[in-house]
Image: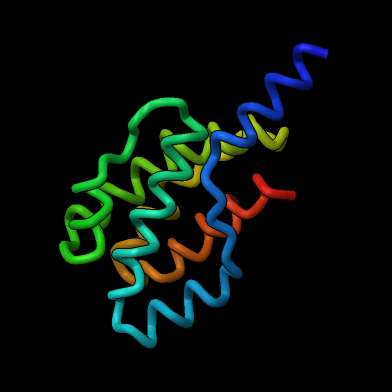
Length: 125
């Protein structure tokens, strides 16, 4: 009984940020990447809550939408530090997304955001 209560408490502490991954891609292109500033902030809040620590700080999340090297660092942290915690929480096998997100974040950051949003959405199922 205590384990179920702890799991419900953990689930309630995670902010809800559930978007259609395709809409993240579309809004990223339509706004020329400006939507990704907002998306980075909200996604960092969710990933930090799942990790139970501040992995991606607020300034990194903000500057990741404007500055390419910081953008790459954001996706590197998301792939190496945060997504494994999400996979652990939802019970999926661990997979390393760091390199994929880093490469896609360099060329097409909207696609990296779409992949991360898809994994975040699995938290709410």
